[in-house]
View (cartoon, rainbow, N blue to C red):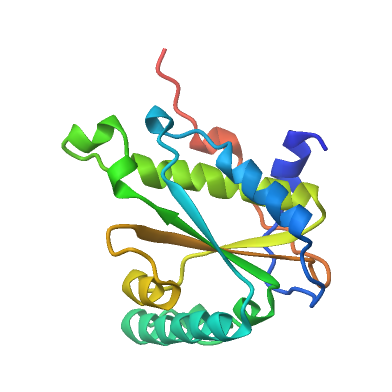
Length: 190
């Protein structure tokens, strides 16, 4: 599959079939993540693969708690009907955990210490593209409290849970989302 096609056609999936994800597909997706670039080749990511229904139910409960809390605080109307049921129906959830100690040279800079997060984001993008290439749907989910997720998944307090990536066969058609013209996002300094 052409990488430019995958970049343009991949969509977030919030409706998964119950069909399991094969071990081979999951390994290929995680291998793709592991090939992401990182500062000083620090590879600051770890992946926790969740297929256990009870653990997914705890993640769902935490996301629901956060959704309600943010709705109350923000008043954002879109949050009231927003559902996070896909956290229970996705066959696989991969927690992407970053290690701030592996952030790279930016740890010494005034506003630094984010290189590890950027590297993990690159790994996440690779996961999405690999899942799409394998005919699977995926979703980048961040609606959780880091402290609570550390407790649910037994994550070291010195590491940061950055995202939950839901993976599975899409149930139904994925909707396209509009993008602004790239020229609106570019500034040239010549």
